[in-house]
Length: 599
Image (tube, rainbow, N blue to C red; front, side):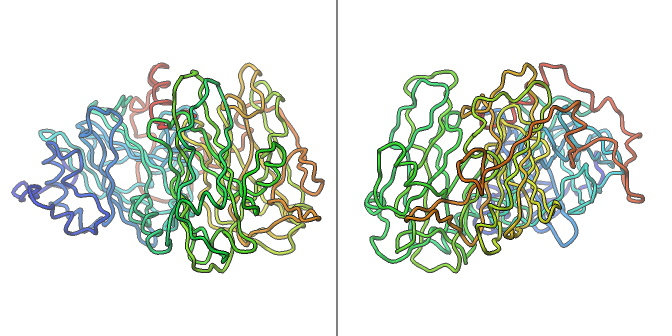
């Protein structure tokens, strides 16, 4: 069955030698011979060669399926982009249907999908998911254009090629942005496949991962290449064989003095060094326990252990990590100051350990790799936090039903900084009962920008990085951080545990600013509820909503107004049975099974 016939006389790629694909690609590429664990994938290799996939699509990634006993079950994604379109070639071991999605958070919720069924080989279905977690056809004509398809029933593979505008201006589609820089969040993608005639519940026939559509595709390789270009050395700041207590939630601090870091190989100098990259290290097997960590910095060289004094010494945030984040490489003109007269001299890492099942004897050495250089950088990077970063609402209930919580950082806080700054990256953070989170920037009474996560999925996110271009903050700008929750029984409270709630945003920006308090005391730039610093004390308001319609989501919403024109399938022509909701127990399986981390 084929939308574009293949040449059955084509010679198969010889995988007994270094594959032709690997010879054509650079060293960071994955060979087509290695896809599907190199097992019984002749149908895929024939398609790969006959349709010149290696030359038509310079980028590729293999997403391993969710059954650990079947590495040969997965999805091969090939792609390229130009000024207008993304071009995709997708393959999986299936005979009934194949789906590919660009996900907001990495799971089923809030995903833009393209669906192919073998029974209709010349058609593609443009779909999306919302809170219901099963595909719905777009209200408008399909934005995915069929290029070719190939269903090899004997070989057991489905392959199809498609293209789509990078930005369709359709609120049921997810735009594809230029993500070449590691400071632009990657695109999270999912795939699913099956042998049934119509699209249905996938079971373990699913895969997830991340793609840099404008990069090499390999997230780790992209970061490593950046560090090879700019870093002269690397040290690790890690918890040293720490025994995680049998407690639901604990925040444990680990301090690294100047001498500790020099002992690891950091250059012993009085000159300024620059940190050029951070790489998270989570000990294998402990992913479920390490909820997140924050690295605070001090301009003093030693570690204090005197309670409040320790907190005060380490008053500026240098790095923050949560599941879903990979290495962070700074642009060539930016760095985090280290040593010298004004650089950081010591760090304190606070790890939030989550142990709700009270497991015993779990040993952890998670932390972060710090890449550094002696070369000067034009600007220094700082982190600003807004919303409720100090959890000033600790112990207060979230409220029954759907609620809206607004934290407004006043213009007086940004006015403390007498220059314009540029924000490189924005992270948003909530916990288990979150639905949506926004961080609006207000200037002269008008919202000029908003960073949003329309469908929050706690099982997928720690900190959700917003895909957006860098933006500027001027003195006098204010921020309104809004979190929406759904708590059915009203028992949920704000607090530090994963089972409690938070609402905050972190912004990497330059040039770094410091709030001077006088008498030699300085603070990092932050704003929150009841922090004891009037210029940066945030106001707070809570509202109970009647329904999800009042969430005011801007993506993957129903009943949109369609733009006239365009090619594709009319949704009314699609068999609705293909998207029938699976039984409730299956829906629950979908929710948890796509998640790598359970926070």
